[in-house]
Length: 107
Image (cartoon, rainbow, N blue to C red; front, side):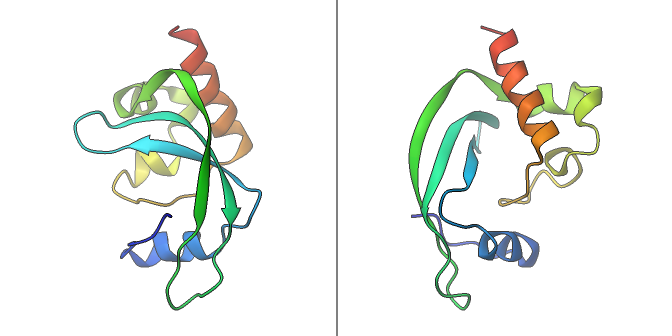
């Protein structure tokens, strides 16, 4: 279950998540890295108490650190660079593909 979000923009983003959506799994804390992919199995049913249920899909070949994301010119406009404390954000196809490429490039 993915819940406990307090930030207004993150809550808005979480409320928009639907069953079947792919999401990235990002470790916070010391690691600060995209480490894998998940799938949403149950979207947000109650906007007053937003929560979604996810299941793991796969671990990426190598984590893509926040430092690597910030250093990549192709990701300069990505919300993870602009708003790194935002816990739920949209990831467009260009960003997703670039992150996946960075994970494979380092393996």
